[in-house]
Length: 264
Image (cartoon, rainbow, N blue to C red; front, side, top):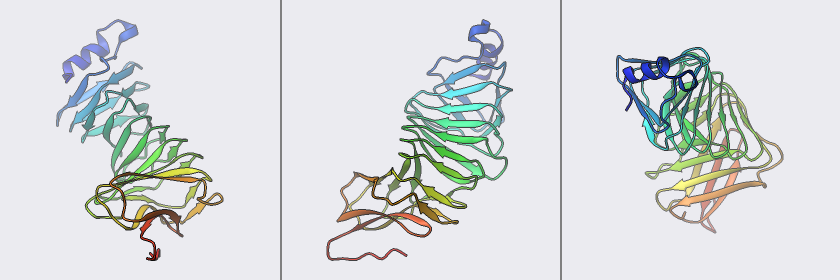
């Protein structure tokens, strides 16, 4: 892990063309009570961020997380520039003080939020997944191949800044422990495009109604769900699977022939 002294050296003491650039696999740990500052308008790269201190991006200084590792940063992220997550990384970052733009592609970004300031937005590109817990007014936009991540047995992630799904975008529900209700909530309306996908991963054979997402303002579909793909992974379900939208929920029904499951 890079120390604060090393970060300061890289930001101020290297040649200008390399200023602020950490080796791409560097794991940055910011301990509780410590503050790491990237400045100088540089484009910084790290393999992952962990710890419980403060990570500050000064001015136009950006940060790219691309080490392919799983890291949890439970401190405070500040600044107004840009943070990207890619390269197979699974990175947890806090919202509430950062007002810049976030993006994720071919990786997973998990956010923790408890109100506070909204970020400029989260862009979920192809292969990217966005999930987490808490409540944020940050707007979210998913491109084709990007997915919003929902998990059972976890505190709700409430998106209150608007969710935009491009054709070909979708959702991933990870269901475990016999639970069926995912934690993804949308405060307001959720408009589904005419084509997209839902991935459902089961850790045990099961049947029932699995809630992928809920929207307080209702769910609408541009046409129907006929052109949506339902992809089942993990353990094979006990019966047939069907994707369905109700007034305020997107669900996957798993049922055996001859049995009927009602969706309220």
